[in-house]
Length: 280
Image (cartoon, rainbow, N blue to C red; front, side):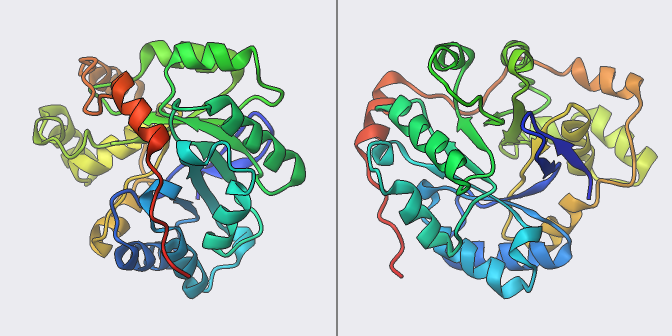
């Protein structure tokens, strides 16, 4: 498995499996099967309400905990809960995570970041990050952080390459982890002629070409699926490499088109909403 080195010298796999919108039973099955196939990066969140299922899938896989890179996110209503990290770890059934995020720049997100820094110092989080933050929030956070984040998790795909944000990330050595890596399954993106052409050249599907593009952009990518065949196909992208010219062709698709939009009103709602966590 290819890995990337973070700004704290920790290594992270370049591709993993996301569990957003997976019901607990599906998350458990997908995580178990993915780990058996050779995945080692697993991503979840408080808000996905499947952390217990992810933990079960990890244990059922037979893969050692130290060979798994586990990522989760604290939800805004948990930012002022001093027990939020302990409660998250309890749901996952582990005494540490490899990456711990704050999920949204909502509510008292600086208090949430302080929880991450505390967990990092105590070894309960091997790396920390921010999710769904734009550059303006990062610049504000930079004046307050004691420990710089290793990751940001945001929407990214060939229609939305996060050019402006990446300039900010480069200043601090923050790695980008991309969600909606296939443009939320938008057929207009997946059916772009360049991906069909490159797929024929390399014997890959358009989706596999797009996922390979993410890796060569320096992103870590976490496509999610409940379909075992899709999970297997998503991992089968490490045996070819796009040329510089092909990467330039794909770069021409950037339309600054995003699929996820968030308002200040929604941020206020995020701060008030509390996930109904799974029962033990």
